[in-house]
Image (cartoon, rainbow, N blue to C red):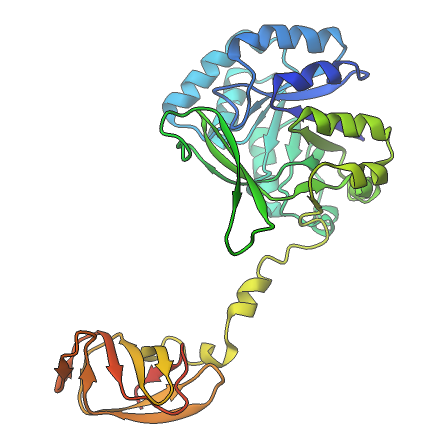
Length: 365
């Protein structure tokens, strides 16, 4: 199995050069979302990797405007003859690379998109890439069932941070300074997400790192020929090196919490189903209003979506599926003004109605 070692910070380059013929993917400022290598350092980085017998792969994963695409091609031109590949996420950039340098190996990244076979085969036929880096939303069973006919070697991420959000804008500092911090939600105080800002934009990483090194046999059996291992900090590489191939020991020593992601299954739709009330779903779309709040024996706060000609009798279905009827003769605005006759859409108070619970739907009979 091929190992691609991915780094974003210059401090991680020298340790990797001691490997035997390493394939090194690195990020350069202006081309990579989180890359911290200077553009001017690139000739030296190429020289060092090639001298170590390695394969230098450049990462180009920024979302691109037309101007940024043209600028990126200009930056790349002096290095093309020494590169062993360019990993690219923007499909417009992939086409441009293929047009300008058809012999340059193209590593097509579908990691944040394209979790379906039709797209994978479509871009493979269009671009003839040297490698396809699959979406991390594909469970291993889906990868195993993928028709490999006409596809180049496949790669999946097996170690390192998972990106969950990227904006081309600097969201932490207006001056676009390099900043790394941790974000904690009040609702989930133990879930710590890392935020990274650079002149390229702002990235949020998952609270857990991906760890699939203990599942390499399954990955290989699914027809995947390579894995990408990303190291964000020197201590991560040191833990990897110290494990000496004992991935269970590395799993226990990894400096952050870990996850297998969607390796076994992609069940991101389950929370949506749990949040859906089956009883209310049967009548949703038919309602003329909703109960926003109810205080037993005192009032109901309702939201009307249409005008009503008062008095009017309405049906009520609460989240428990129980059905009631109510007669509305007058409405009271939140200002205290009484409304009779024709009412406009909006929020109103009515006397408490038995069975009315928050989220109960109001229906015309």
